Amino acid sequence: MSLPVKIIMIEDDEGHARLIERNIRRSGVNNEILPFVNGTDALHYLFGGDNQGLAHNGQALLILLDLNLPDMTGIDILKRVKESHHLKTAPVVILTTTDDAHEIKRCYELGCNVYITKPVNYENFANAIRQLGLFFSVIQVPQATA
Image 1 (spheres, rainbow, N blue to C red):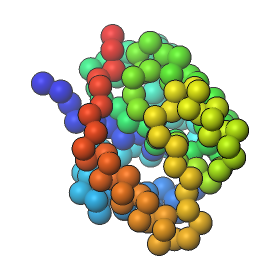
Image 2 (spheres, rainbow, N blue to C red; image 1 turned 45 degrees about the horizontal axis):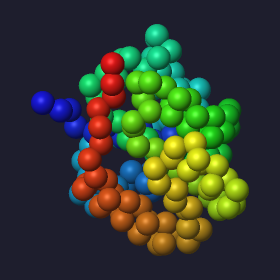
Image 3 (cartoon, one colour; image 1 turned 90 degrees about the vertical axis):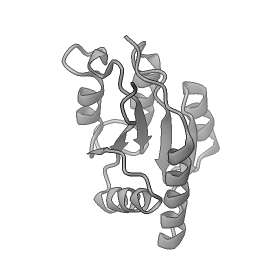
Image 4 (cartoon, rainbow, N blue to C red; image 1 turned 60 degrees about the horizontal axis):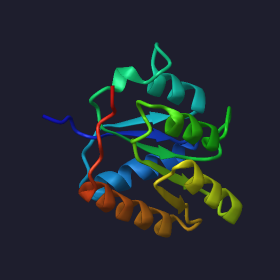
């Protein structure tokens, strides 16, 4: 029996984090959302005490990732996740203000599954997140492997 998908949200802007969670909930997604405001804490959680990610064996994780974090770049986190034998199948959704074509290409080359540029307008941002929540409600997420 599979466990419900756990959403790992790595977002340093608390206003954006609240807006993201609220609008994901409004779309009917009730999965656990674990928020992290920096990359260090997120990586510690993802990779655990063994620094391999084995603690998440059998869990289905979905990662929402901002690229602009206070202690490292989201690119660094994306690389670590996608290079990990245990976590590489976890979908990574980049959700950031960066709309540079080079960065977008780089994220896809490194294995991100979806790249979304945060709209500047509040209503557009809220609507984009609600649509993302609807997407989350229908996608299949694989479990982390041993």
